[in-house]
Length: 210
Image (cartoon, rainbow, N blue to C red; front, top):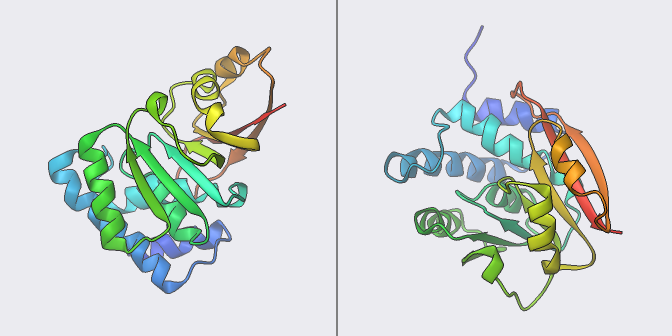
């Protein structure tokens, strides 16, 4: 079997997602992969270290939610190394993103990546979500890192505009977490996701005030 280059692997993944991105955007996504690899040697940003794995498990795994974003203003809570916020901000240049995390080392990387990639639709907040008081609310709050749906709904719901949505990116179907939401005034939708090159279950949980 022929070995695919990172560029070809990204192109194949984007085609599978039916997400046409310009050559410039694809180039910056690959630049972000290289930044992750470079900084990971010192900062231990992610346990995923090979370019092919980063493309599947971080880049495409972030971009798979683009069809469900549909927002003018998005908050990425617990962004860590800028995931999913940086790939999404590259794919959605007309959307305003705020990337929030309390980890100093990871936020240093995120700030540098934003500068290196020339992203003008992203700002960074280093704080705990409990202490965050934005001037404007968000259409969407998204996270790959929240421990539970109940905690996310309780802590982050206040940051949404009326009719706004919480998007929780999960692995296996979060049955126990769903049970914890019973009685909450929230509508729940679960969308199965298929990430190209990733043989693992992925689900997007969409929470909206009832």
